[in-house]
Image (spheres, rainbow, N blue to C red):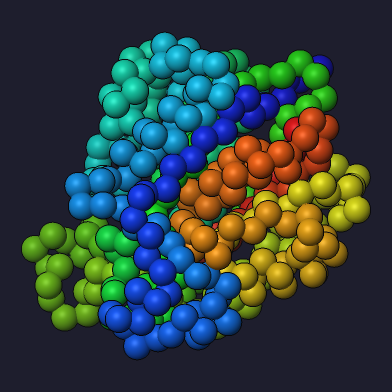
Length: 327
């Protein structure tokens, strides 16, 4: 029997500073009621000055490793899913490797926006199945507060900072990741992106006309595609394993906003009591979103042995997908 990839430890970290909707009322033209009604978000965490993506990722990783009972020398591979790394390069995963002193591990980043953690699960699964890595540390980490325009109420209200991590190992039983299904449509990139600096926008042209360094999003268009894509991916994962919505014990979706969560659950026919929701407290943490929600659900006792977990995400690129686990 082919080995399956299991989660043996979860961890997460949220910065100490909390920015509430009331706080946002003081810096942008919005209101607590407006934000809560349209997004379900009431507060988000913001990284402190001098606190970077690698710092958040490292702390989440340590907590996951403690739960899994592994030490740095045990880790073969470190993957960090992020679009807000400390630098363009080196990879944030390399900085985490140095922080942990996991000298045996090779390390790299994945850039798939809010779907990054799911993409990382698929990559890790293949390393484990081929025997190229026995213990993988997968982290989703973002400091989105540094790439949003705090005068744009359409975007700054949505995002928060944080990190989540899992330790992944092989299992000989029937528990673990049953399947993972990934998709992308690059033609839609203008609907959700952050230009930053790159070959299209060299460092010496960052201040020139038309080069906005902040997150750009056409919210209504993204919403429509997101709900359809999240549902399609979830149904694909269930069908691939001869299951239906009634088999799902817990749906852990990307925490984009409450309206997307509710619309996705309704179309998938998963009751809201079986949906993990923390967007009200953390906002949209992009690639960290599912990992943080998974850790919170796990530590709260909402995830039990043999439970069926459905994870799905949608992000810029566009990228989207779903993964099904037997815990």
